[in-house]
Every structure is written in structure tokens, then in C-alpha cells.
Length: 125
Image 1 (spheres, rainbow, N blue to C red):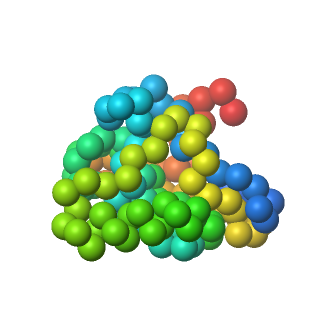
Image 2: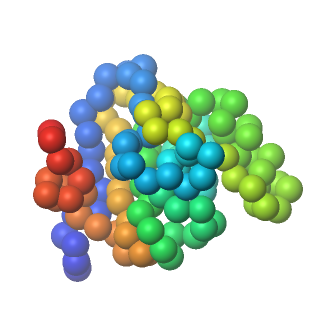
């Protein structure tokens, strides 16, 4: 299967704050990502305004504690027809790590990508 790896465990500390990764994308009103999905322990962030994973970059994060107010806001937007979804600003905190590892997967135009690619995802690290 390609790619051989589609999810990556990143070392973390329980309670470590998690922030919107900077990309210099602006989806409007100074926001960088749209929240496509949120539960108490996972979130999906999209770097465009479309309510799908077909176009643009999408991040899936698991083994986290998503801010309860953000989960409530997402649930309300979902319940009322998804006409608007929460959007977050660059570096805005959206939750914290639950334990010693946060799981991340990255999609581009619907396809899962190899999250180990330093040339693409981890510039400067």
C-alpha cells in the first residue's frame, strides 16, 4: 500500500498544550483551519473552507483532550446543519495531549500522506 505509513505517533507529555500548526494559510477572518470533526479525544482540522477532505490539507489528531467548549461548539454547528463550522487562528490552543503520544495523520486532496516526510511537514524541525 502507498504510502507505507499514514499515521505517526508524536512524543508528548500529558497535559501538553496543542496548537494549530502554522501554515500561512488564511481561510478568512484571520483563521487558518476549519474544524471538520471534534470529539473529546480527537479532532480533524482542514486548511480550506470546504466541509470535506477532497480539496486541500486535512489533519487528523487523536489521543488528545479537545477543549470542551470547542467540542460543544462543533456539536452545535453539526446539529444545526453544518452551515458554519468552528475556525481557529494560527497557534490557537485546541486541546492538550492525553498521555505520552499524540497520533497524527495528514491528507492532501483526500489521500492519506506519509507523515514522516521531513521535506514536506516538518521544515525547521
